[in-house]
Length: 467
Image (tube, rainbow, N blue to C red; front, side, top):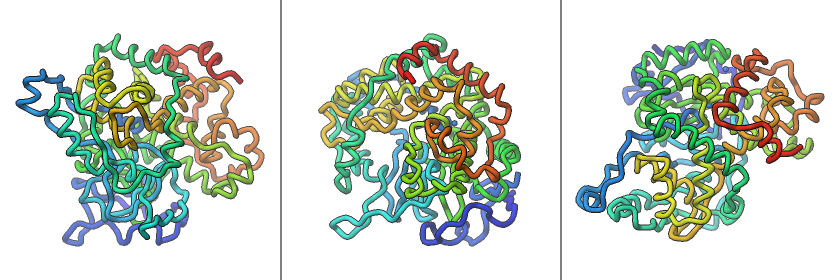
């Protein structure tokens, strides 16, 4: 059943920024609920985490050298952003907002959930006269499939030599070339806590994630969630088997659209993804649109700090908020992987991750994410952007007893550090608060449970992050 609750109430945006026409099938008819093309929920709200994107591919044990040469490993899909033939907006978030596959390219421009409803400025035109690609497109090697084949055929002894469609901007590489080791002890502690309890992440997922849901069951969960959040007519939800990541937030046909991968929609984790994408990124984006700092000039005027790491840290916490075992596995492993990549080659990094990740396809993806932007991966080096998740999580948990989380949601895309100075200027009469944040006492108890489950200690966080 395709549900349409009426007129669009999302903040008005310029039509040139989006694709044209409503999503349709080839026969011109609107999509049905079974093909997952549209859902207009009329009922109001966590790369990778964000959206519970931590689910790895089916477990595959590393082969012996002999068997590897005879039978190269199967090639699971990569959670990386493909090169687009149509324009792609810049992105603030990581691969949880990556992309859909080639068949979906023409259907709309990908937008970061973290940037909605902000409209980015036009991208710069390079020397060739073409617009420069979005960050994730620019960082995706054009020869990634061929290099993956060589790597697996070599039994993991070949360091990929990546090529890029255009030179990766030096400013971007410079910004993210240094890995932080500030929270490496906490990252490894979280990883070991999971392994000590479950033996492997795959076992943890099977025990806690629950079964995969059918399309009808997914629609039911989405309807109930949208009821709780009052998002009538605002978010189109698509179900697809062709998504390269667990979830992606985009603007399509002038409407914010959330695409969900059917293969990753697990019974106990689906609502966590909705809390991440809708309950955090979307609602904070809508609230941000009403604030005097909704654009770059306003942010400069009020002297605001960057929205990250608060934005991704908060969304990541919300992904696991109601889990019985709210381990922060993916954020921790991304942080660790990037730290190790900064002083390891690709092959060394791949072997090092064998301590934590059994599936070789999943290990490859982690290594590519950490080494993207590099050409010769035999050299130490990293792209440190994905460390933002654990960084944001720990900063929020450190200050959780003093943060006004209702204001943090209501004021929009702001850092927790700016709340006090902004609260007297904020437009709060139209602000939305996610339903799961309304009970302040219960919310704080859940954050405390996350701290305990992940073997974090307040004294340690205070020492690492002094006032």
